[in-house]
Amino acid sequence: MDFTTLLPFDLDVQNTALESASPEEIIRFAWETWGPDVAMQSSFGADSACLLHLATRVVPDLRVLFLETHYHFPETLQFKEALRRRLHLNIVDLEVLRGREAFVREHGDDLHRRDPALCCHFNKVEPMEDAMKRLGLKAYFTGIRRGQAETRRHFRVLTPESRMSFDVPGGGVAQTSEGGFHVIKVCPILTWTKRQVQDYLREHDLPVHPLVAQGFPSIGCAPCTQRPLDPSDERSGRWVGWNKTECGLHAPPPGT
Image (cartoon, rainbow, N blue to C red):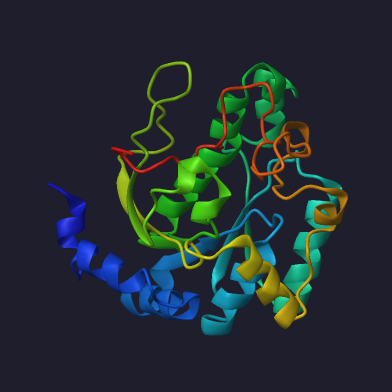
């Protein structure tokens, strides 16, 4: 059965209505629909202050899920702490499921150089999906925008996802806990441009990630992030040299 038929609304109709809604209206809709069963995922990257500010104005104690991969730039962790204090954020740190020491013993500290897809899988996809299921989330906010990359152009404001029945890069099926589950990815600023985000940050006097001023428009883990090779593609500095543009959290919707 298509799980979207169990939603308390018609997904296509609601997506059409929300396409022209403001971010605040989208956030409010999600909170009124799912209440505490919705959280936010944030990388505390270049533009993260925008959605964090928008969301916590509507839901002040919203849980913010952060993937502590232990590969972040020091500036990212400093930025995270500055935003935590400024916005009084309720941050939930997530780490590799087997524990950092066990992960390094098994895979070494350079898996990102040998197999970045597998590294992202263990350090990002698995802990995020485990947390979603453990917390009983029905939906989560994310700050992706259609203009960020070709892989993100086909998302809708409400994008259904089936989780925990995914293929491990290189083959096999990952089992982080029993059974799969479904969740709705909610994208409040999906239709915003980079300029709109920048205008919002200035209007509300919000901090910008320190690395933006050094030429990093898209910021992930330090070993897999450099300045963009193509100035027109803000994500072209991610996983340079690999056929990879996403970490796995935001795989394009099926059929796109």
